Length: 324
Image 1 (cartoon, helix red, strand yellow):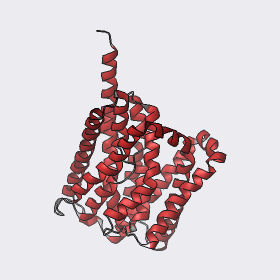
Image 2 (tube, one colour):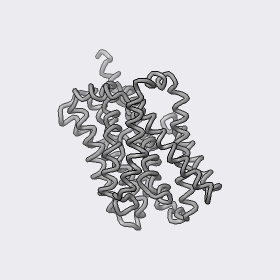
Image 3 (cartoon, helix red, strand yellow):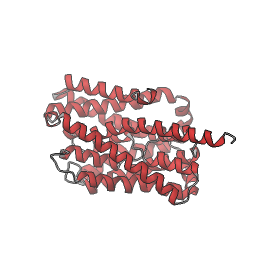
Image 4 (tube, one colour):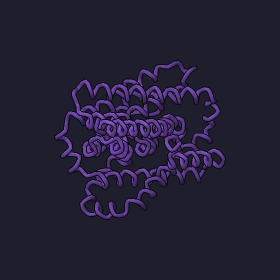
């Protein structure tokens, strides 16, 4: 049953969605939350930049074949599968949910859970740290570019204001965090637990603002239980396809067991922590609620499936170590 236990952070997000549904912000209050969300997103990416060791990421390039496969899975395979699912008829998957699936597909990998599952499965943890970090570093640039290329007609335009928003809210704080790391990196490491609350609080603020806007604009009446069930199936199919492709592909390419595990876990994840704030920058406030719904479902599904898979990998290795 522990494998099926919901992620507490996902539960907090769902509770925030409930509050936004019952007590949505509107008018001047919504404007205030919009400003607070903009500042929170900037703070979030500043902390990402301050935490990420550029030296570790650059040193990890020595294992370039593994990282190339992870990046290809994250920013090539996933988007291609997302495009295929995007072509589903609107009667099966409404356009905004389809756009959300495609947005999910162009996001970077997670860091924390990729490393944790690789460790549980006894994979190459050092490569997982570098690979997941490189994915997030690349995602700062590649995700907005892919969104602009693939979803230009869904509220994610490529005009000057969109580019400026990406630079000011995502890239500039991240670079500032990298520059400040030499002075505050140690302090951030020592205070990781309280700063994690800042991270998650910022994301919950993003969720509340996005879903409040959706309620105010009246978009939620378009979503029924049937579409929600279809979305769950789509997320499961997407995850299964990537897990199968990364596992088989890593074996065909001749990687050892530990590296194959790293490729599977780093190449199959999508980052909720990066995706939610990115969505607020790249899409209109009223659209964000439905756009990020596939990501929220996929996040919980990937945790359940990958926790099970990591334990299976660990059990297989234990059996191999038992003397015949």
